[in-house]
Image (cartoon, rainbow, N blue to C red; front, side, top):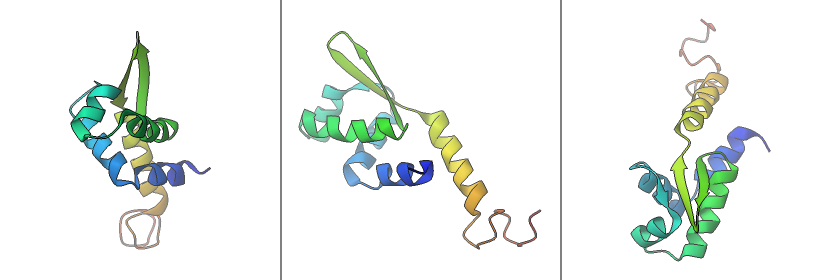
Length: 102
């Protein structure tokens, strides 16, 4: 699947938006995210798996806990790549708005 499509599909969900917002504060374990969002742990884990597959979230196991953090470098890189490829919405793909490619 195209990395842009995978990225936007992954963030196109209200629960995943809430998880991303929660992780903006820093690394958290799945139980803490579940408690904060008042969602079941299996539901949170399902959404985290989607975010992890899309490289938006990094997950690591420490003992019995799984910790999650945003992959900020990837989020910034995929965003830059998307706008480099598709421009600013005027159809010219160069992002400068004048259609001259400069």
